[in-house]
Amino acid sequence: MTVPAKAPWPSLRLGVNIDHVATIRNARGGGHPSPLRAARIAAQAGADGITAHLREDRRHISDDDIMALGREIELPLNLEMAATEEMLGIALRHKPHAACIVPEKRRELTTEGGLDVAGGGGRLGDFTRRLVGAGIRVSLFIDPDPIQIEAAAAMGVPVVELHTGAYCDAGHGRGEAELARIRTGAALAAEAGLECHAGHGLSFDTVGAIAAIRQIEELNIGHFLMGEAIFSGLDSAIKRMRALMDKARAELSGQMSA
Image (cartoon, rainbow, N blue to C red; front, top):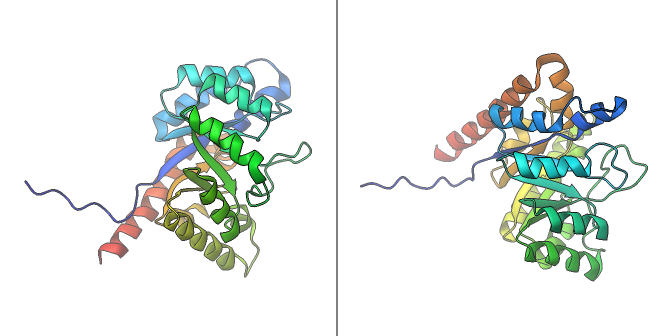
């Protein structure tokens, strides 16, 4: 029997962030719309995982949401969290599939940049070791900066997630430079033995170029999908994003096979 050759690029997973379903719910109180229902729709539409950010101020996702998601959904749960003792306790109690450590400022509207892993010292290393020791896949949300990637590799975490916000927000003439930074960062991460993910600000217009970076194995997308869901429905928005990702990957496959 002939064994098919392994593709020289990994498959690309889609993690759907459901934070802003909770944002809408919290604007009025009560239980509608339900983040759990959104997670189930995402699973049916082709998501490979669910991401939820439990913030210190609980501005969207709540502790009860994390409990319900962990109990009710079959997809892997990726818990975004700050490196605090409170969040560590929650993660160790609920044991999500993954924990992505992100910087968090109380006054920010959204995550404004990557972690300073290089300046994090031993405290961040001890924090991540406790999560890894509990069997949780740990990732660090960082800018595509060689210094930060090197520091993440030295810390021994298995995964980095590259911040794509600067690329997605780039004005005329700056997009290619920011995209080149992400390409270089992804290659450096892979060379260092890190699994490479990416996310923040990705849309239908920007996802293709990121999905075509062969070292990237997972994209986490939320705010844009929830905004599009208002107009086309969540199922439709996720399916279109999935199709754009798959198209970019198929084109990469063709280029590498040529």
